[in-house]
Image (cartoon, rainbow over all chains, first blue to last red; front, top):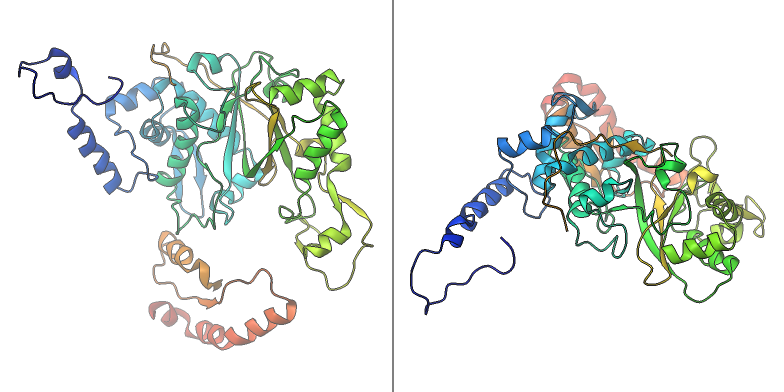
Length: 379
Length: 65
């Protein structure tokens, strides 16, 4: 079934149409969808009603036991099993063959220190950023090029939504109760794309993290804020990097002594930097040295005080702690500057993102699907 | 327990999942994060009586809400 709903034509003779007879009954579908709303299972959008037969198809995609506990939140007394994850992936609109990616994405994000430490209930409402590497991108129709943040592709839209529904339905982290989000991040459950390995001048993210060059893998971290850098104006790599450094060096994001900021480079920016001889490490080191502010700027924003120990929470100090002209770098090291290449070559527009806590700097290999991949692809 | 009033819904829900529905706690106006040490002291003084009453009430206090 595709295209516009069939409209009745009063001029057509009332003979049974065999094609119509085979179409699903939209009223029955809507009844099931409304039932799911009534149970509180939806994130606001319609969910796919999951039958046992559909659930079995999901579970057939993994060697993991349905009873395996993916994660337990002791303070809430709740856990999520592979079985529960499958139900929520189905409701999110995933195809069964996406399920190993959903499981790997969950495992990847739960390596994040902040996710383990209560980040899912944070007042900032962080969003998982899910990046996929390997041939599975093409096999599942995962978008890696134009519009990676803009929707329009089934796996990109439904895999992160599955994580959101798992959080809601398995752990009961729902808005206004255990989800204490103040405003949240636009597109919180919709940030998932493949790395554009074909147009990246650098090694894939998962390879950088130590997996085999052709591995199917997911990398994931909790993030806050996404801000573009539109620079089609220069061919000087240092001018370009200065533009990124200016965006990264905002005081608004500084809660602690240091921060972590990543870049999703568009192919054009990445190729320009690589063409000028910059490796990923070179870009990271350049930014680590230059991203930051003078103390006077931090004092003007009421963030010049830093508590001792821990993460070094910032506050307004009563007296000038450090001379105003002293430069304070914001990025503590290479591990705090994840670099990804994705998007189209249409224009020189990249995205800076903020890591909510601390990315694990690791990638999780995706288990090979156990059943043949269905002919239907997303998109 | 003392909780800023913005988190009352969460605190009540936590009490429920921990098997202590109706658990009694003290609230202070939100926000707290930006207060100076002196302002925190004022807040503490403002709720000290309620905290003492709660501690003194023991099991009885948990039943009254």
